[in-house]
Length: 274
View 1 (cartoon, one colour):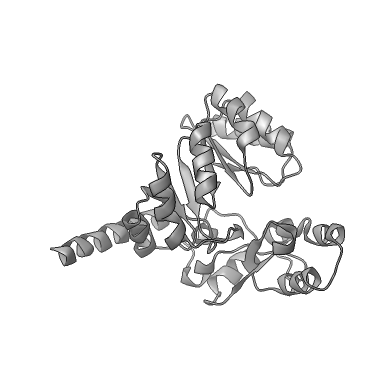
View 2 (tube, one colour; view 1 turned 120 degrees about the horizontal axis):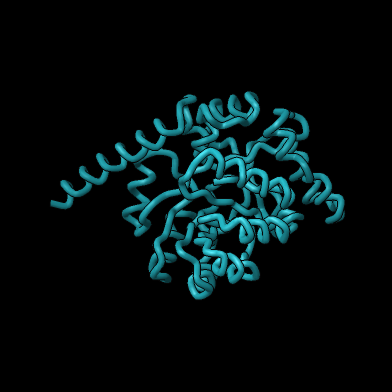
């Protein structure tokens, strides 16, 4: 899965072709719909016939027809029942029901409330996201009706993750009250760690700064965190589960631990019912 982020179309095309050279397995592109290059990236995904397109931070309706014609399976993040029904009607293959506990762009509803309602509103497979870091969270998602989970913050600690060491260190040292949400005034709230930047942005957001200046203040802040570990101007995206991330480890080991724990939790639950 290639994270397009704010990358232009040519960059994403290069990444797709690099991925093709490395594996014969299906690949996908995650498209952030608030990107200034979203039209380019959406077109590239179709032209390169990637197997899967996932989307976040918006409504991908205008692009879905082209992706489906190109043979892509479309799996959008949905923050509400209404959006889930629209995506189902337009031909999505599955849905990611993401609660506001997640990092990055967030909605209003929590995962516990959102997942069962979306499962009831669609016939599509539903993946749960937001606030899931271990097997207990995965098991809870399965009990709510999801058939799988998506985890983001947990994988920031993976050995393979190339974020700046300062970013990883902040995740590993996080506490339960370490995150905050900014950006509501502009209509696209974002959850991140409580840093100097996040606090100053929040102060500017509710201090009368014009929208254009507020937009400019946040531009490039994620890159500064990811690539440079900038503690002054970087935006360190993180879900509420950061305090549950305790160590660096291989991604495959994270997945194995989560699923083994989920299986054990579900087994205990079945015994309680009996």
